[in-house]
Image 1 (cartoon, helix red, strand yellow):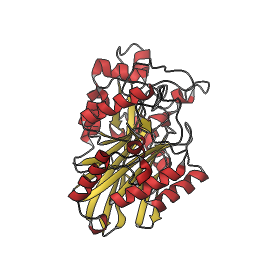
Image 2: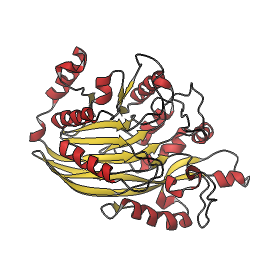
Image 3: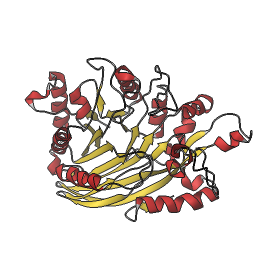
Image 4: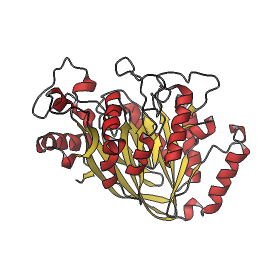
Length: 386
């Protein structure tokens, strides 16, 4: 795999000579995008929320327990993407309650995610500065050391707002990551690291055009909407279609912590896919769920909604031929966040055990309730496979 940051190329962007040289090196290694032919698969997933209890589970059982089952699903030929909504630093004490909570986790989670097969993590989200800008910088360093590429954040604005380009075979896939909001500021001026924030949407539009020129396929990860909203708003649909027009072949939404519709849309290049929200990949949300029972409506939605434990590994296989893009297949593996909260409540377990699983390996009662819910949430365009 070859990965490189591709900053904007305009003379006013403030790019260093080194950054521009990197672009020239990458461009010299491959032929122009319009001449490429081939297929590539992108496996996209939702939010990585390393809540306090998830970190406790990892301390006793290991991070490979949390992420390990992903390694049985992902393969080396595809490019695996998720949204890292937790800084891999815990200098600022994480706070589970509060509006909003403060997130942070040990840096050794990065190596486990890499072993599980994750290649690219979006780092632009509302929790990006929970450990201030120095914590974000150290997160980027931990990801780099683990061999994971970070999109949507960087030491300077050019690297944060610009794409990362990953090579698979002869095809170049550009990844952008942007967030609609940020909970807190960087904590220092100038920041040690920057986050791609699309309050200036013209900047996102420019980045899409630049990514389009630099790659055969463009993936835009966008953190938007609000907690537990189960369908996209009209404005989001308009925005997504505009992003497709400007160059995105795959739009991957996160932020609501529940699954939303996945649709295939026409693009100027042929076809594109928009996944409005891929929910959570792992978290401590929904811990009060038990199949066949309803949690108290007085409990916070983050604790009682089973939808927050539903996940999807969305596998989009693209076919590229002379600049035209078609969707060869669109499949999804239903995922489930296992959480032993009730076993601990009954004293049937001592340690926390929270991990990503295939839904097909969950208890039959859970499968019978959650599989129809996942199918209804993502819609008919996605073929679900075990």
